[in-house]
Image 1: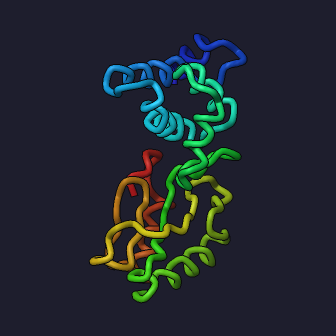
Image 2: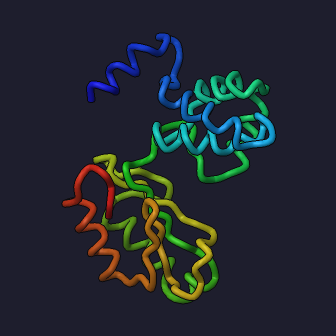
Length: 178
């Protein structure tokens, strides 16, 4: 917490990206052939830290990479992964809707989670713990239906496994290791 306060104190008041985020993005410069190639990794860094990429962050990323804000915005809007309007939940759960998952009950799992959580696909629970997202394909057809929550892939999901996941989510620690 102290380091968060120090970082906020170091950043100019009109800036949204912290020194820590800027430093992490700059550390990528030598790993890529051009600054433009750093766009997607920079968006991921900002999204990971802020849980969304607001327009002000797009402008600051563009300045940092010496690009036009429209170039960064084009990359951001190409991918459905990034949110711009508001932060997603602490955990983001993607329910696969590919043909394999749909045939094995993926749509029912999504519907069940919506009902239990009282949200629609793309929405975040009132407590901010979970954003429920539909995914076109998670690339795990052999273990359908599946869900990606955080960085963990849940395989061969059924209603019971979804309920267990939701129970762990409400009792888990603040790191989102569900």
